[in-house]
Length: 140
Image (cartoon, rainbow, N blue to C red):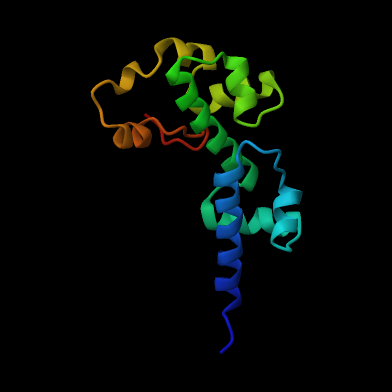
């Protein structure tokens, strides 16, 4: 029985997403992700966006920022240490992306250190504070 090509592609995209989830702190780029599933970088980007609503790079950065938020809430690492721990190689790029997704700088977020989630179960807080791209967020 032949496998539907769309299902095969969705399985490959899930492998890419799972790899990003596992290896977010590693140096990953779209070309490396595409090689891992034997697709071209362009095709992977288009198919990933169609399936998940964002590019592989955006998904990777969102995972990195989510992890950074958790590390910053702990309060035992500097912003620079967090930047490198989540796989970013530039503090400036990390801070810009963090501010874009979270709505405040990493240092401001670290200062408030999860005050928004006191008394809320961690699984609920994670959903509520998940970073959302400002340009994709619905108004008000």
